[in-house]
Image 1: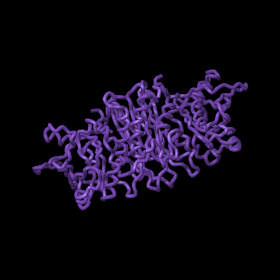
Image 2: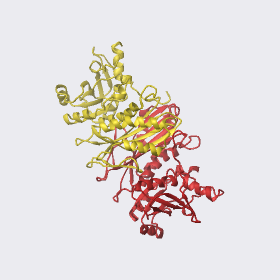
Image 3: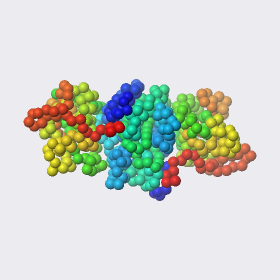
Image 4: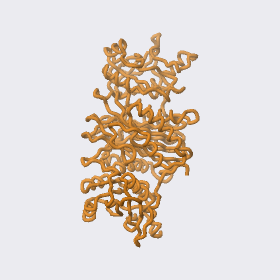
Length: 309
Length: 309
């Protein structure tokens, strides 16, 4: 693909690369795409925007990995609803200089992950300017026959679980993580998921969304949190815990089930990845319980995008 | 709303302002939104990205008008399919300084237009950085019972029509135009629309999309093109024609119907806005025919986003 390229040639190049799925009634190349839906369960929709200099640096990441991540974070949102992703549209803001080549490589990474998950890239918008790269991906999906899992169904007494291990993602895993689509659906078949969220801002921050939306509290046991090997082992236990609580970008699933289902998961997880109980839902307050029994308020950390800081 | 505000407070503020519709199963505040669909006709989807310094200047446009435009250009895409818009998700990239206040005013303009068109704002993503404002809106809609109108059904002999009048939009109309949703649906009921597109890049550029996708040519009569009063009357006829052909951002509908339907439209338009026949579909080539009978190739103009220019 020549680097000097106009929008229409770029869109043609993306169209040639993108695969349709049986749900693609009309893909790239008209005023809108037309996505078919199975049954009457509607569509799940989420958007995530990644920006150069904030979410990635072009100097140390390949465009393919950036494109991959732009879709992966959206797939993770669909996973958090225990849904099945179906299609995506992509808004690109490209640097004027070298933008066409960059776009081609971005879309290579994005479409490769899309193909892996049976997701059709059905539309987009491309623009160029003298500023940094911005990618906006909107994902669509469908609920499975079990329905969706929201953040709001947890009740006191529920057990809190997490998939995988937490912390240290920003050293590289945030670019290559596996969105937990299959795991979420397997869990959804196996147990009654009361509430679920994917960990993007960090456990300490994201667990509050379940607490707020479900109108409950939570007690997390510090020594039960699975700390990822990516967290430096030479750090103190306290620092390692803080990384697991606050680093963010783990893209693991945090979910609440009743005690019976919790026990079932511990005996026989039945899903590919590690599943760990890390706490219990309580009536109010978000607490961290240490091994010696001391309790403290869960730190307000996590990776929050604060304005005017 | 305080100007020093984090993402979660901003999202709460947007959620309080946004209206649900009967199709909103789950709106702002979970990992994804859940939009219901009527029947099995699927969803129409389009995304448009607007950037500060490219599509608008914050120094001479209110944030409300920018928010309005960000949705309006997407509504125009749904109109071009003769569809009915249902919901939107919004990705915001805000300047760190004053971003919260800017976002509130943007969303005020956007949600006000959304309410007018029965569109639910069901989700979004907010970010801040030291760069310019970027807004990405993804619109969803549904086909009417007549189905969609694409760019690809025109045949030689069809008459080419345009709604409204063209040119001079960038002097202000591009911020306040009425997306042709109602007009498109009225036309779709009245006649058999073979192909349709909304004019965003300019007639000379956009008519080529119908020609390419329908595998036909087009002959446009220069003296039949309705030139908008916004085009400076002190200019030469040639310059005024060029503005109507190439300015872009008209957001009017360009469509093809057979001769019988064309005659019906001329006798009794049956829709609120002006409808003008401007040409005929032919076997190949895109031509401009002048009053004296001379023919020239339609200028390749229009507002194309060229990379590396």
